[in-house]
Length: 497
Ligand SMILES: [Zn+2]
Image 1 (cartoon, rainbow, N blue to C red):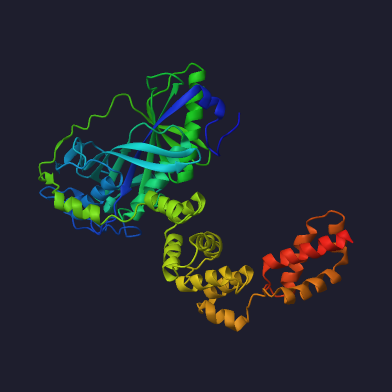
Image 2 (cartoon, helix red, strand yellow):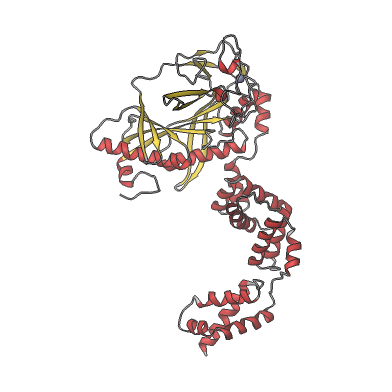
């Protein structure tokens, strides 16, 4: 068995079975107040049950009002994934009993979601892939249950209603996904999109983006779907890929052994690297949906929708395509920068600072030096775009060497001093004068007869060592390209003699 990717199902299994995967994402929307009341959504770290009122507690007589911003976030998401938006929609009560639901029902949307029939395209290791999106609807979040041990040692379950009634968007796909990697990429692309349009912070670790997958297998060539299993508790993109990969393996082994797949909900155990049974679904849940009597239907007029469409920013897929096709960046650089808002911002503003710069060189500095400095630093790293533009231009016209420019960037990040002043203070001037370089190269060759002899004996790596010695002798100021050429010329001449 050979694994295709870490956590992916084995090739042997995928040869016999076709995984059929649908994905459900619950996403907390970025609003100041909750879905149907004025309570604050800033409850992270707040004392339990401190962000509550009669409405989100579901006390008798309390009446909900619709959060306009939350509706706009779902409409924006719907437009961004090319969905159909209805002219009018309504709210429905989803009835079920559970301690995290104070009202005994959740206000949600049943047959008239705010967005339907959309699609999202993203890149995978096997090329672009499109997933059809069935629907995106708006509902309210539940309270949080905490199962713990009380002071007397007895097991207790505590309820924190701070999250109760927070706006939640549910996005459901068609069963189009075929691999664990596609599932992960879909979730990653959705996160980028939600952040780009400002609908959600979509942080998986903070529960702002919760991904669930329905996984079933069918024999290659079969039409009918197999029994599907729902997977929960995947708290990172890596978990999504690993959990689905493990579940595909588990189901394949069961089917090979002639066992029936049980329709159930399974959790993902990150440490064991396996899914486990959470609950068995014997019948489909009966939520007795009916129209919410406390809220009027919601009409979506064209002007409102047009305004939301006009305010949409450049979407991640469009930006990647522009970086690649218009600016000539590699697919890799485009993907890295679009996935990292700070990098994309620095790239864009640096190009704005000097329109004459080559976008590919700026991208190299951003994805290389900038991200290296930022990822190595515990503190926020700030680079002034005009200083980066200055450095890139100075390297491009060979005024300073690349290694000196790197040093200047580090100093700029550390001190905040302008790059031009730092170059002046350090006396950095790239030596591109071949005559001056020739003298240094001759000195270095004379001082390293062993390396010269090694090269004569066919050890090509001696060149790198000698170039390094010249760079050292010139404090990194020599034009590395010219040094390389000069060293080779002299070595080849010496060998011919
Ligand atoms: Zn409230």
